Image (cartoon, rainbow, N blue to C red; front, side):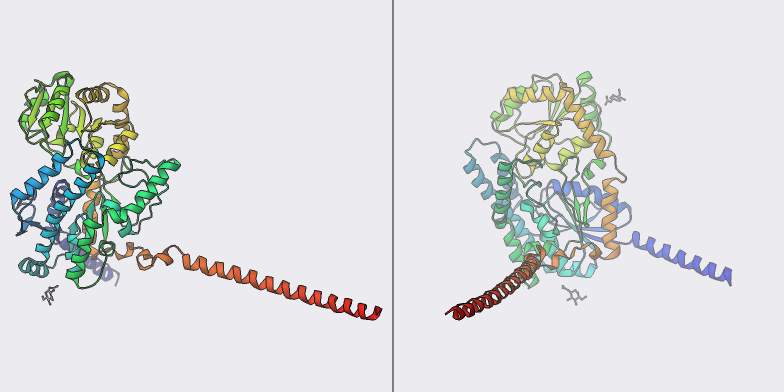
Amino acid sequence: MAPMACSQAYVSILMLLLYSSSFVSGGKLLVVPMDGSHWLSMQSILNQLKKNGHEIVVVAPEINMHIKASDDVYTLKSYPVPFTQEEMDISIKEFGNDNFQELPFLVRFFRAIERMKQTNAMFLAACTHLLYNQELMSYINESKFDALFTDPMMPCGQIVADYFGIPSVFFLRGIPCGFDFEATQCPRPPSYVPRGMTGNSDHMTFAQRVKNLLFHLAEYFLCSFVYSPYASLASEFLQRDLSLTELLSHGSIWLMRMDFVAEYPRPLMPNMIIIGGVNCAWKKPLSQEFEAMVNSSGEHGIVVFSLGSMVSEIPMKKAMEIAEAFGTIPQTVLWRYTGETPPNLAKNTKLVKWLPQNDLLAHPKARAFITHAGSHGVYEGICNAVPMVLMPLFGDQMDNAKRMESRGAGVTLNVVEMTSKDLSDALKAVIYDKKYKENIQRLSALHLDRPIEPLDLAVHWVEFVMKHKGAPHLRPAAHDLNWIQYHSIDVIAFLLAVVLLALFISLKCCLFCCRKCCCKSGRMSKKSKSKSH
Ligand SMILES: *[C@@H]1O[C@H](CO)[C@@H](O)[C@H](O)[C@H]1NC(C)=O
Ligand SMILES: *[C@@H]1O[C@H](CO)[C@@H](O)[C@H](O)[C@H]1NC(C)=O
């Protein structure tokens, strides 16, 4: 009897193992990426998922920046869009160039909005062409994907997920105007959670808290021109009314590219997983070309300079100022730049069309990193402990730069107003003033001291959603409450009413008693009066 049960248990364990391992190697993942650096950092996760044996299909517009076919990792399914490569390149180039123009604040502001509208119109057109591409949509329907992996900054992926009922995993740094907080029901008191673009830290004076609250109120209007078209598209396509917040609230897991060494401490929800620094995992040895450059830098080492994947050219006047500053330091500067060579370029400066940023920063000879303070760059600076000179251009970059500066790990420069001397001084400061190196080393040590690598964590949660068909157990009931219920205003009103009623009744009782007493005494006095008459 006993051996029998034992062998039965053995068989069932074996079956279970077989079953689970067959799943582990058999998942199907649909990826609807966002282009640019967002896509580049998503790739390390796809590589690992492929190694774990999953089938990956990436859906992307025919015209794009970085999403190229890669048969050994994923299958690329592209769809036609109503714009040309040239139109897209021009739009990106103009977007980049705008950041270098000396214009009054308001003009810059409205121009930025105009550009955002243009770029957004392209993304929106691409999304519409994906949703109404019948061939691709029926392919997705037939393929029976286990999960959909997307960056909700462009909410197209979630519309597809909702349409086919596929559970989704989000991969993001954040969504402008706090949509990520709204859609996860994550609390963010404006008293200590700074709003984007305010330049506030988590310790605010009264005036800063006023600014923070005003920015909070303005957010609802500021982003509506970007996101309300998606809500209309989703409502039309899914044939039911829904807001963007509601659409995004269907995401099962939110993989957040942030870490509290850089971010100010703030609340998180159970379905938010912190994977800041995930892009650092992707290390390769330097190529011969770059190794030779690094070797030839001698004892002074190298400075790495890149303004990100969106900006590779800058106006000649600015380029010459920058080149002049580089001439004043003994380090070898590797500069990612595709524009015309500045005539005053010093011998120590090498222009390259592309550079392996993370691999160069990981080299012990890296002395400083000049970056536009995009989130990838900042985390690569942190994980490799290289002090930074930050030149924020747009989006969340000002906020990232502010965080690094407030932690003493870098110097922020205004790229439009800075002179050649400002840049030279900033570089000398971060290279020779020990406190910058010490601060970034401390941040790096804190960041790297963790029980599990962010890449493994991200891969785990994607597989979790594929295996368990979502994560509804992590969804807070807050989603089912209206504003009044969420803030317990109905309960407070009820309790207040009870208290008021109790007060009213006791008052009435008192009055009644008093009157009785008065009446009695009145009657008595009347009696006594009549007696005396
Ligand atoms: C998906 O395909 C099935 C048939 O296999 C069909 O019944 C269903 O309507 C399709 N769903 C969508 C959303 O197109
Ligand atoms: C660079 O220097 C290292 C160590 O000195 C050496 O092993 C390597 O071969 C050098 N590489 C090149 C390309 O010169």
